[in-house]
Length: 418
Ligand SMILES: Cc1cc2nc3c(=O)[nH]c(=O)nc-3n(C[C@H](O)[C@H](O)[C@H](O)COP(=O)(O)OP(=O)(O)OC[C@H]3O[C@@H](n4cnc5c(N)ncnc54)[C@H](O)[C@@H]3O)c2cc1C
Image 1 (cartoon, rainbow, N blue to C red):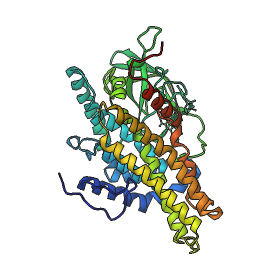
Image 2: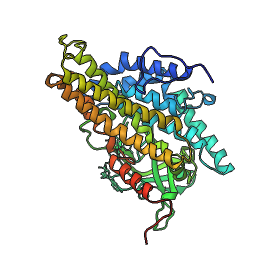
Image 3: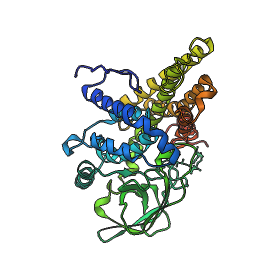
Image 4: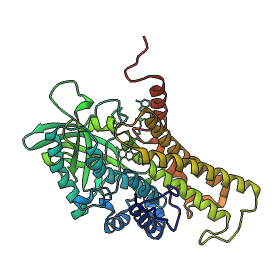
């Protein structure tokens, strides 16, 4: 076991015996965030524009290939390391962290997650060939991938087949349909969509879900709709339409039928939306401490820390933050294919705790710092708005996590009432 490497700062995930690789990646993420992303965050939020400049920095640091295996030229970060790094980025710019998650998942799902999913030898060989192409695009060309699954139906919640379809044709697939909330729309080079294989019958089946990369330049592909939301404005999550779009066989990000198995095998794949919000919780806490100490750059050096009510509020925020960090850290360290029931329950609990907790910490931060702290030139009101978006995201919205936990606690697999 390598000697743990201490850091010069406490990362968003909290202190831990980091490996040298984790420490180095966290240090880079922290430096990028502090020196570059933090100052730009207000601009993306105000304009509802994509953080292109941050992606230039991520690209230059090799971070687009964070989860591409080292054997394919990437940085070879594992699941837990990615989750730690993503939280650190989220601490400085939520929209960058959330969109970065969509990109990274396209490499992580095809990389280490796919390695943990059962496949036939033929599927494994096909996947190895195709993912090589995708990894090369990211590592050599600096390509960006989006991950638009949502359609405004029950599909993204995992309760129905996707309405977007792909019909097999010579050399590839013909794609038709529509996606909503496509983060990175207009910024991505490839859109990794989930769609249902159209087998010509009337009974679409979620087991026939395909995971395809649609090149942004494809004929028949279009982006539409306004984007003027409450928070996470820099994600630029507009609508996509696919009208008879031809996608070559090589754009299959997973062999036929494998995504469906993957979603069942690797529930932790849906937890990757959470680190962004752990980062935001840290940012709200960090700001509150600085504000009460009178240390926010550009603000009058007024101290408010001597009031017992402020001290109590900061203690409450720290307690909540420690709870978020603890359950998050445990969940990422134990994430694996086919988790035990306890591990899965903890994963749900971690997701819910982080998504709802981040918003609660941001709420407390504004209440504690007071009226002057919610002005637009300070980050707190943006953190408050951004933090509200986490528990709206499918498939694990706050409501659906409660739904799943309750049901899976009271019913064992296959159990039904008479
Ligand atoms: C900032 C932001 C960025 C996003 N980026 C992406 C992206 O890049 N890719 C992507 O695919 N999606 C993305 N999404 C979409 C997100 O994952 C959800 O699909 C979306 O927020 C759902 O909104 P809706 O109004 O369609 O929800 P609905 O499906 O109408 O659901 C409304 C609420 O009802 C509950 N609900 C839904 N289905 C059920 C059910 N079967 N049983 C019980 N309760 C249910 C849920 O709690 C849900 O919050 C993004 C969302 C946001 C806010």
